[in-house]
Length: 243
Image 1 (tube, rainbow, N blue to C red):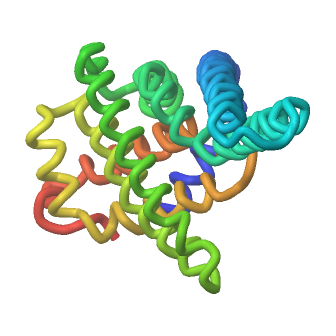
Image 2: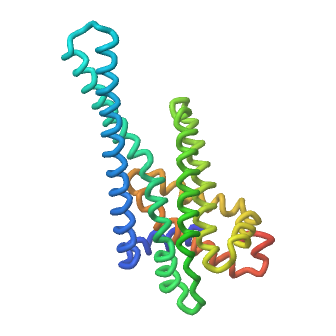
Image 3: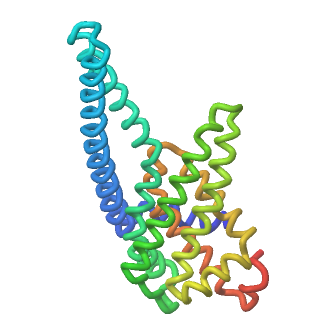
């Protein structure tokens, strides 16, 4: 498991994976900026219309006071959007990165396992389903854990464990589905759930590092390619995890 992590980290800086990383980060940042601009316009319009309605309804305080209130609310909304964008960036990066996982897997397999048959790329529709499913699950987990962050760090522990499960599950299945049908990949993951959960903790540690976590999809896929290869080398792969 540790060897697989170090192999994935070293390959993260290889030329093929650097190119994939730049594409994934560029698209993720573009998506975040577009979402942020749209939300900023929506919240600013709501603040302005709300202030106008309150001014007309209340009948007190000068127009300048209501205009100032609308401006303050718009600034607060903008700051909230920036904070939310930073918080959700890993989920967005994971969604975008799902479109590049096969490029990552191809590069890792060619470099590390050249004598073995390469995996088959996932169909675009399947990759889209997996990416959307994971992004929604990650978003739900983040939102559920957020209220607990203010209670002695319980939310941080919950978020870490949830990330270990979700990330380990998602990327292992993506790596496994290159070589086996989806139902078989899911069965393999379930039969080796404790081992894959531990492997997911490595990815959860990676995703807990600010800014570095933007490369999570690339690292996680490379890492799980190695993990799956080690599992596939055992005839007892559906019975017990590798030692």
